[in-house]
Amino acid sequence: MSYISIPDRPQVTALPPSASSPAGVPSPVPGLPLTSPSHILSQKRYVSDLLNLGLGTSSRSCCGMCLRAVEEAIAANNTRMSESIKILKEERRREKASKNFNEENIREEIEELRSKLKMYDSEYASLQELDEDISSADADVDGELGSAHKRLNDIHLNSERFKVLIEEILQKNSLASSLVNSLRSYSVISKMYSIKFPPSSPPSINGLKLSTSPPTSLTLTSYLHRTSQPITWPEITAAWTEVCKLIKNISNLTNFHGSRFEILTGGSLGPSKVGSLPRGKRQMQWYDLGRREGSGNISVGLGLLVRYLSDFWAHAQSNCGGGSMFMPFVMGEDRIGGIRLSLCKGREDWEKVVEGIARNLEFMKNHATTFAVAGAKKA
Image: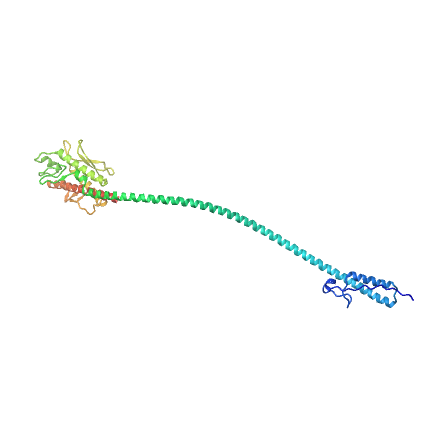
């Protein structure tokens, strides 16, 4: 009987489940530990060698079962390897995707940070420009403040000068006021013209008689011709010339310009005149206040002179503070005192007319400065 040499069975070394197969994959041979692929192949070769030795039928059947088990283990192991490879690939894919995702996020964050950095750089540049502008504005403001302080100092100095000037002006104004008050009491015109009313004699101005003592007569002119005393027409003409000068001076002093009548002062060429200014188709007409050689009638001229003085008095009452004053003889369009000029018939009437004109002229002369000052203040 011959003996067959059986090769040694390879030692089975169990591996940890985590190292031999993925979690959840069952072992191909129940009751046996999981083996590695190289160990399975060595078992397969061992079983194949047993079959090749020519064992009996029962031994072959056992070896066939072992071989099938080994093959199933190999198939299961291949399946597990395929699943493990898939799992590894999936994990690697996920890791790669996660890595790519992280890289994309990082790139986006980097780009966002770059854009923010650019924005911050732009804002910083803008802030630098703004700071420069503020610095320039501060410099301008400092310059303007310096100029303003200088102007304030100049204003202060000028105000001091103005105070001195104001004090000087106030002193001069006080002197001027006292001078005006003194002028009110001292009228130059009142010293230039002297009107007197001697008893039993006609009124005179600067020593010149305005008429002569009249006998009974119908008009001033006729009575002058009939008087027993010598008729002094040159004296009377000169007297009424002085009257006209006095009236013109007072009119100029109070800024009065007649709208209806005009006065011309006479002289060596003839007597003074009173004229009515033209209206519509009426021409300018002049009437003597005196006598020319050959003829003379001053009645109309006296009537126009009364109207002129009436207009002046209305101006003095309205514009020169004469509203509270009263003339010695009230004057109107055709009236002086209680005499109507158009109805004068006797010597008494003409005496009253001449005396009324002289009295009113004296009143106007004495208040001429007062009228002038009041008119200047109102203007």
